[in-house]
Amino acid sequence: MRLFLQVVPVSEAVRVVRSIAPPVPKESVPLEDALHRILAADVRADVDIPGFDRSTVDGYAVAAADTVGAGEAIPAMLHYRGRVAMGGRDPGSVAPGSCMYVPTGGVLPKGADAVAMIEYCEQLGDDVLVHRPVAPGENVVFADEDFAAGEVVLESGRALSPRDIGVAAAAGAGEVSVMRIPRVGIISTGNELVPIVAAPRPGEVRDVNSYLCGTYLMERGCHPVYYGIVRDDRENLAATLSAALDQCDLVLISGGSSKDERDNTAAVITSLGEVLVHGVAIAPGKPTILGQAAGKPVIGLPGHPASTYVVLVAIVDHLLAAMMQTEVSRRTVSAVLAENVPSAKGREDYVRVMVKEGRATPVFGKSGLLNTLTRSTGLVRVPAGSEGLEVGEAVEVIVW
Image 1 (cartoon, rainbow, N blue to C red):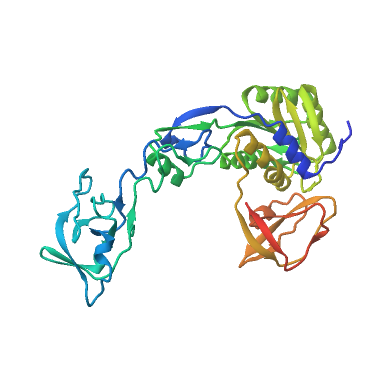
Image 2 (cartoon, one colour):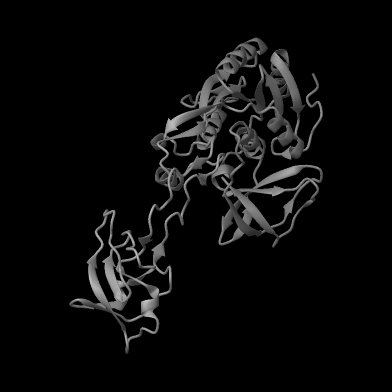
């Protein structure tokens, strides 16, 4: 088998993985267990939110018309009719020329359309002096102003944040429909690999990619399933991949750095399914393999951890998003380049940079070095049609 069947652009690689992404099933979970899960169905308000007109401040519920022209020298004088009790269903009413004290969150009495803040009022026995006029609706949230009954409060496809959980609770959603957590198998291949607790001898390296891929997957709401280290033996790799396909929704195979190891991965995928892409015009990460077996995606990743992480961000992110029927979500920061960034035309480069005080400095290093991962803030994408980026150019940095 040739090392590369045909190198394709990153955009084509993304199209391929999205086309073979199997949607994961939906499930219902209690709201308290839904943090960071992907919504599979819209959440709608079961009642008006709020269900009543309420005050947003401590003050006096008034008819705004009664405060027109009020000032420090000549305040509006209103008759005090009592207090609104928190949690009370019937707060009473205010007649023209009168007011009631209402706490923050309290029900607005009938006849009132505004609340004068307590800081600008003065109570003198049965009268209240209002030293500043208020406009209709001032310091008031009206019934259904937040959400109306039946209105969508959270759209499907979003990862639920603590803020979203609070909104869903207000909407009465005791349970929510979410995408099942994808199970992703991780296989590391290579005769040179040893467990991370072992002291590597000359020619050996620790299995970094299993842990790199696993924590990447957890960060993106997936459940990693580790299948350990498989030596450069097609029969063993085929057996391990077959087991992973039975148990997982997607399988990542982290390949070695040699031509034979990459050919083993491609051959095994072909024996169980089909290789769709063998080589992507991306740096680092050119040896990437995209395939499918048993109706599930199988991705062959480069052996070097830095290259693997770039492929995860540039390509696998899109696969996971398609499986969970959501969009790729990335944190980015704007910066200007502190140095020139050279690139080869026709190849999409992902350059590690350190961002400090708005300036992005490229973090260059030899292939295979790990220190560039911890010495950098994230990645700058250099488009395939470019021969590089110039110092002072504005860039968006994909934060690790």
